[in-house]
Length: 295
Image (cartoon, rainbow, N blue to C red; front, side, top):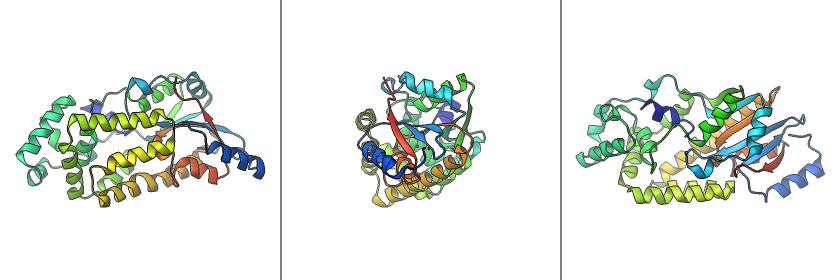
């Protein structure tokens, strides 16, 4: 149970002085480049690195290019989305609430999925509905070896400082902004999905990720999520989990850049789009150079 809770958190930067003609040409050219790994050069010429992650332990996304490891050695701080959770009580809820929302069949499905994910049946209903929805939507058990944690482990091997862009309290406050009704709606939608559906969606996301096209990743991620929830809930997810957090992430990265060389590992869906980190860094006058991420 503790391993599962620890590893769902990973569950999305920086450049050169703005020579108007040269830099504009570079940005226009890089708009056509496809990469999940970027060198980001800030206005003082200091180099940072942005890696768009996917929160899975799939072998297809775990073989990092040697350049990634080399750049980890060069930086001062390794930055992730969220700090490690210490107070697990913020994930809990009164288990009796499930009796008011779920049928006996749905409760039994929860127990079966708990078994599949090697979670204890004894306290499974003490976890918040949104958390169960996140865990149960995965077609495979969650392990400690997801891509984010592998990068963090490498950074720690190189004795780098590691920190999150948001605290667990901040992160879960966003998820807790969904009403219990909305959380239960999400959970019920996940419970209706069979393993075949989950595997199909998972493969769509992996395929999009391995295209190294951050716009495609964002599009597929959005379409997969919207396929089983209402438009109103999707709009709330998009606003609270992507748009607002992208702005906060960019602001905090800008603060960390002063005096530090960063390696930012963040969900790839936070890179693309009009409010994505790549666009925000371009608007700040940073120079972005695509790099090889995986072998």
